[in-house]
Length: 293
Image (cartoon, rainbow, N blue to C red; front, side):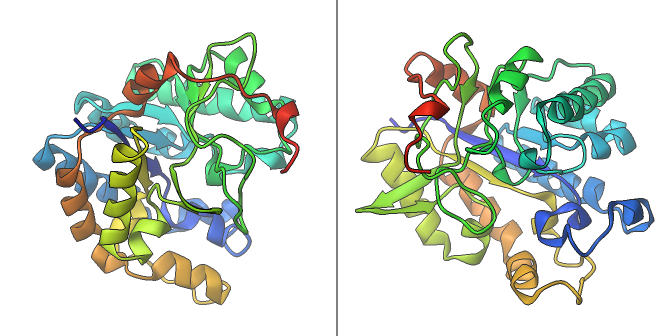
């Protein structure tokens, strides 16, 4: 029997992505075309049709402006979790600044939806060897889990030495880190958890990776994507770098159809449910053990 895989959505609008962080000023965000609620509605309907539940890692900035969307997510049986306040990467903070960012987001999310927030995903998977204090800050604020580490090498993020599956990053806390799903072929490790990997590459490659993880490795995979990825009509930022534009805009029109196939192809559940299933066997792995980062 296949494990229940984790399904998640990183709730941010098209202008808040890391690819555009140097070309779209935060001060201009409120003047731009706000499309996140419409795109989340498409996703919520898609999940309802397939009968699946998911986790929505949501920016506090979005929750402040769309409290009704937060309630709709929770009323649909989905988990609401934190994606930080405004998509600033964790390594741009010190510990005090990070604590303030996640506290602000948590308060707004909880106020909007009326539920406790216990899960966190760092913008752009930006917990890595530069932020050894991040998990301790999360534990201090009552988070049960994080899904913020990418155990790969990438030009935007990555902590190649980190474990591939759930682990405990602190010796004195039950906090669980659930890294981005990867698949290995020999010495090659490839991200296989969704996002651009799923949108840009053939559908069968993603399903092969999930089957390999579920079957040969006997582990749950987890998959993520963004609301802007189901929105081919979003504005174009033509002055952004070519690589950023290619990553962001390529195959947007194909994404919704691929998602409809995927959510029916495997068993899916919320990330908090996956964490509870993984917690008992999650080993302790400390940043001090990272000798190859």
